[in-house]
Length: 502
Image (cartoon, rainbow, N blue to C red):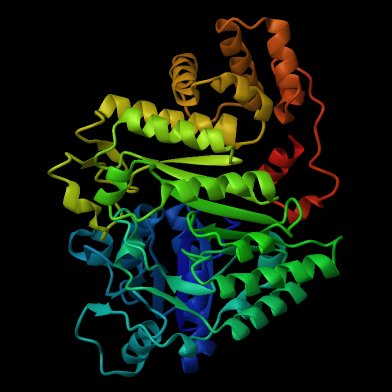
């Protein structure tokens, strides 16, 4: 083994699609290349020891916003204890503004952008000469048909224990300034027949959970329908061994043909992630986001009322030009539409994104350390932004978790944002924490809050007992509620199972 491809994933269940693309496209060097993944939080010395035990001559690291700090430590230690090992970096975090990054300074080479073709070429030059003179190499984007698909490189263990990431296309035609996809010229599809053949092979090997990373799954409706039909065929042929698919959906593009296909999926088989980000037209225009808000709202309502799809809908707090009142109106509007989960995000300054052009006129202040979360702007001061950060965390624990499905409706009342913000502020005074709050303690605190709002202890207890979390509530009962019997537990993510159980 000469070349090692490595990264630090956010969780063990996340299998790196990017590294597998590199391995699939190594050509003659593939036999001399291996893949070794780690998880953030592991000790730097242990990672370095395990890497060096493979005796690589070249190490390629995938660097992302979530792992750059720990990968920087790994690279620094490797260069101290094994300075002759050549380190090549790639990934979105180091593809932009590389001059100011310590990890780039410590490494030998950097590939920006697409690495599928450029990484094996660079490795060949390092091993066989002539030695590359330039440190930074712009990745070459090949025709999509020339890229070898990586799905056969998912191991049996990956299929059994990890989320399988797949993509029918790369890129995005939209220019939302807070997203790295704003730099793409368009979206590039893979050959559909070859892609579906790979999905067929994965399914035959036992894969049942497919997470599509395409930015715009429903951009080409004909392609969308064929992909969905692939999963519908599997569901029809094997109703007792169902599949589960996750897609990102453009909210204002849902023609009748796509609705018809979506309506055929049973509960627990289909999940959509939908980016609304803001319902404020002025803010949308400011960040170059084109969206028909009425169509988007109508489509979300249809999906909630007429389909079995599980919906994650995203909002972003901290966008330039949007104050708390505007965000609250958007949040309350989204609550009225009743998606299963509202993903409350805080704006981050991803390296290379055009959002930076608003820094001075809108007073954007970002944390200088990953993940570069916004700290304040002209509309929202630091203290208020921190309240929003806590709101987002508590919302995930209480509302999105599915453990308090009935209780959260009462907790929100007629003004969801305002009432949950009051609960969030109170909860922080009681816990001084946003993490590691045990479920039984959280249920007890929810009960206490409801009582401060006029509900009796008995009423609060009955309400919590009606929830999935109610079997582990303040009253101390410990019996467990199982996920829906109609869906085998392994075929559906646990959090969605809770929403279905509610």
